Length: 137
Image 1 (cartoon, rainbow, N blue to C red):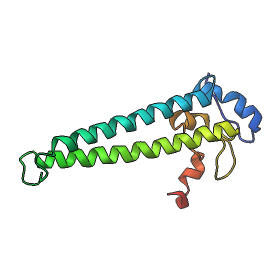
Image 2 (image 1 turned 90 degrees about the vertical axis):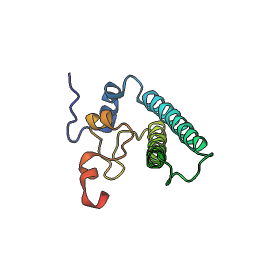
Image 3 (image 1 turned 30 degrees about the vertical axis):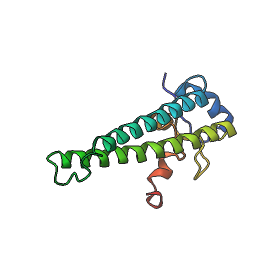
Image 4 (image 1 turned 60 degrees about the vertical axis):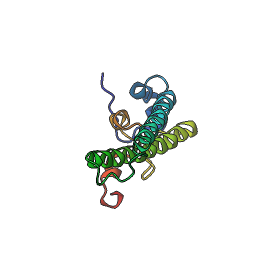
């Protein structure tokens, strides 16, 4: 049975239905996602270090036949590390909101965030209408 958010639904009733989205304990699901994201950061940093180590012998990769590939791989890994570090920060904030009892409430307008949005983006701090506002982009 799908979870439907009814406009005007009280916060207490909304939170009572929240576990159906992220399991019995939303904070545990968030903490698991946070642990995975932190492990991903470590793994990506190891990969980046391995690429750096493999090119220590020949630091000038512009003139190397494999240079473009190595440069691309460095840039790709740096971007992935930055993205995953932002994800860690977002998840840490979501865990803090869950601990404070504010998880699932939009930080912009205070209304409940749709359970479907939380299922897709567990760390999101805003509801879909607020995220779609031009001033939030």
